[in-house]
Length: 396
Image 1 (tube, rainbow, N blue to C red):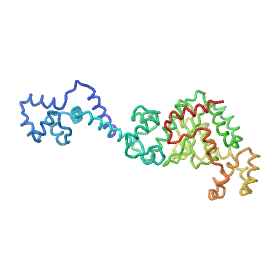
Image 2 (cartoon, helix red, strand yellow; image 1 turned 180 degrees about the horizontal axis):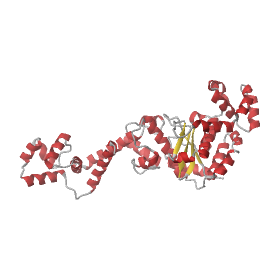
Image 3 (cartoon, rainbow, N blue to C red; image 1 turned 90 degrees about the vertical axis):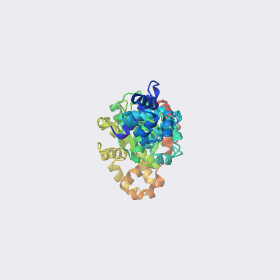
Image 4 (cartoon, one colour; image 1 turned 45 degrees about the horizontal axis):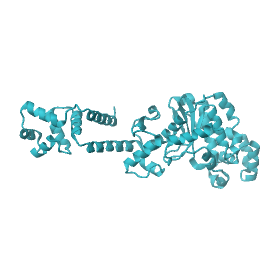
């Protein structure tokens, strides 16, 4: 058990102790010991090494604070376990002080589990120091009853309890947000791999329908047991998308990273490759994130799958000599039934320096993602947002 876990256990025991009215207070035990050994208050003050007035305030329950050294000295006289003396002391302090202790505990939990600067930059929170406001924002967003549910909600096996960097905290936040949406959507359809193989062969023409194409494909995927959502990119992460296993079914999350239309389709095909060929591996970790280091999966294969599906090397070779002629590129796009942004996108994967030249020819992702209710970090509740997504997915 780590140090953090030990602290949480001790504090929980203190609250349990306070809930029981049968337990004796520190003052009760001191008086019992004095009576048992015939020790007067004067003698006790000498034994403990504190002034009689200070001791009297302790015995009368008027001392609001006792320093650690005095508490240790008292413990020498009582001969108790250190945790016991702490619980006894806390049981005698005013209720407002106990409330302060709980507020401190919550604030410490928040700092340990959330990258506050990153979340403020993302627009999720407004303050870095108003911990009560931060707590309420988190509770509202995730639909939690108390802040400690954040650590166990969704599936505690997903997340490591080891010390995390700020990058890891942001990643956990992003993952939990996606996972809870998948849980709320709760796709009732069984996953059909054969149907997915057939559906993939029909996807390409829908890339030409900027406003409705992606929505149509995502709804078709939902009907064969693959849930797809789009979640905002989060600072300090490099996630393009991810594949999850939720309730035994594959789920895909896309991000609006770089705000490019071609990237949405490329990432979708990349993740569908993982759904087709890597589900057993992903089941061992519950999720896989594309764009982040992964020791279990070879990303190059999924990248190649998506690239070849959208535009084969042979077709790229045909259009490459005319890449600076947007009219010719569009004619080939019509012929191959894909959006011209995809041709430029595949070309730029091998020629990144030309991005400024072709930027104006690449469609933005806004129209496509807005139709699918892109989740953002200023949402009041990610759970309520998921309900809106489900309405879209099941609509005719």
